[in-house]
Length: 498
Ligand SMILES: Cc1cc2nc3c(=O)[nH]c(=O)nc-3n(C[C@H](O)[C@H](O)[C@H](O)COP(=O)(O)OP(=O)(O)OC[C@H]3O[C@@H](n4cnc5c(N)ncnc54)[C@H](O)[C@@H]3O)c2cc1C
Image 1 (tube, helix red, strand yellow):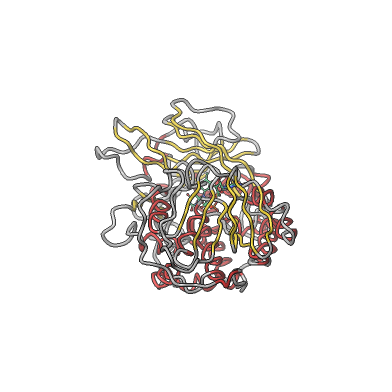
Image 2: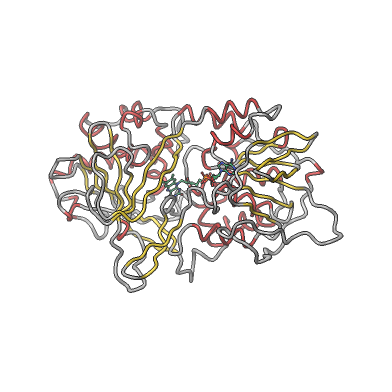
């Protein structure tokens, strides 16, 4: 199906989410002044991979601007820094040697050519990502004339280890109609027709986020086999890889990519997008455009202390005192650095209640986890075994061709629970994913109620019901609406949303 930008306008999406977030605007200490953002000039120093960047914004003799600290240089921390630029001097601490967090663009050697590949976060599309796409347009990385975005059909194959024939191969109309004609595929086609229809209705009707997936699936006209052998293994492969865990996901969270990507019929083509220079390019450009930002990489924050109305951030030998602090580190790390801060107890309890799981990823050339017959391969290939079902993505069909014009022979597989490891491994990485359970979502609501209290703010995709660049950006917008409502960058982004 075609992914169209129909349905709610981008501004409605933003307003809807602002409502869900609740209105919590707490002014920053030291006046919380908002002077509007500059044109986005850069001091040209440092950058994401360049270690510490020297503050180039403050004019000698100008009145001191209030100071905001940000802990964590993943997408949410960098989005927040850019949105606050012009209103504050911003100092960002990132524990790793480079910014990015789950956005990790590496260069792979493909037939002697360097090709940027995203090891972690990689895909987006206008349906579930309207705000992120607006940001890309502002940066010239998407929209008319941009060659930075590549788009391809997001096809799906679902199978079980040891079975010759998959349980489902998705049709994609026009172009891939044959799966609709195969009798062995009828159960899978019926399953996805039901998931698509009811998933979209559930989201449009603002369904209850607390309903567990197993309960929601039980209300659909699906056989036990369709639920247990097709639907649940697919949901597991999209998130933790554990079918038992998938039963307890929030149904609305688990369905969100499906329900928001579908704009036409159940089997009209759905496309995903990737960035040719990689997602790291977005963060690099935002840092470059933030004139009053200082980034410290390799600077793990150890603790935060109160100093009267202000907050003191301690990272290695460095101490910075700030008027407000945005914590954009994952919840466990956030809770740990805030442990000694009086008044942060409720926020810490909420942070501790957000559920996470470990994910191991491998980039490789071996099609080890794909269906036995290559005609059944898709972009997204899941193979279940016992309690586990993980995905193996055929990146060659999703990435732009290499500079020599030939497709890229590459697989990206989740390998946390596999009993076999691939040959021809090019890269391995370990991440943490938020588990979209009703318990995580309740904790998010409790955390949102603490936003701004004692000049402490929280940003991160884990603060919202699904984990994506979209939610990392929406979380940053929420913080900026509280700290710098007149920010020029915030205004420019909202104007682009239309
Ligand atoms: C494997 C994987 C694939 C994904 N794929 C996609 C995708 O295709 N599309 C998509 O939109 N989203 C995807 N996501 C979701 C992605 O995580 C979010 O989109 C987003 O990048 C999260 O950003 P964040 O800033 O909230 O958190 P993080 O990226 O986790 O950033 C937090 C940062 O805080 C830093 N930090 C931690 N402790 C400290 C400390 N004490 N002091 C200083 N710094 C600290 C960390 O080093 C890290 O850089 C994927 C996630 C994973 C794990």
